[in-house]
Image (tube, rainbow, N blue to C red; front, side, top):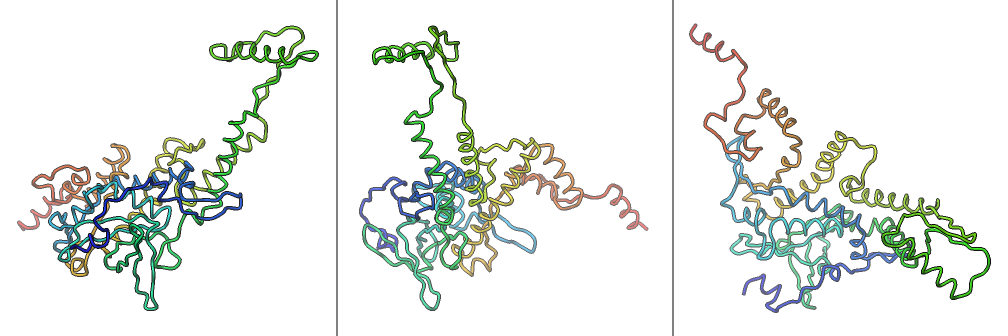
Length: 398
């Protein structure tokens, strides 16, 4: 029996909805809201922040490379790990889905766990665990082991069989839960959302006041309400209302308190974005002062300051946890290709490549590789200053 089958068992398991998986209690915020993980995900700002990071990390190529010679490298397609990290980590997930799932868990709960299914020392697949099923234990010698609950039974997995991706950590062996430390901002956002929902559900905000001279009996009031509804509802909306017998209609505009509520909701978007290091413009919160040029720089800054730290974290985690020391000494390493996100406009890329070529940083084939184009014979030569070759030929002839 394989180790994976011994740990996971052979029973058919019913997979619950993700909201049930993440329904654990996180904490009570000062606003009085009991913050749980599924409630946090129901806040559109939280969900959008996680999604923009997860999709950014997942959409770029992730490949395994091997250093050959002193200054060259090649794609290590022959290595078993290449297919696992770049295409299919297990039987039910693509590489995109696996990384997306990883960022949602590590970004929100600080930790992602996957079992390294090995055979003869080689990793065959990566099997992720639900985050609320794993407990990390550390002994006095700082050795880690993982207690995993599967089908009500707790099983122990040693550290060398678990791929543990940690977010920012205080204890060094387990990541901090972002949802826990941002629960005040998330709780207030939930509170504001719930209060606004109740306000609109109860209909306490009316569009105006229709007043008449004298008192109305019940039938007259009912008839008047029906008359008003037929005059200003449906296709008659926004048309003038003609009244008689001294009746008056006084419209009610948005109050200062309502305007402040909108400002509070906007501020909570910014506050939650700060917790996840995501610029509001990346989740659809428009910056009115942004121009086209400044917005482009914000998108590039998102790649540099939001996605790149996650990419570096995962690259180092793959190298340290999925490659052996012998494989690392042979020159194997993982690499995300973020160049596609940094391309910008065609004109800007052309100017950049031209400068890199003239500075002898890139040769034509290296530029073509960045553009996903095939190499050509003679394209490995670097830029030569005009006349320099002729000068060298003259010196040789002398």
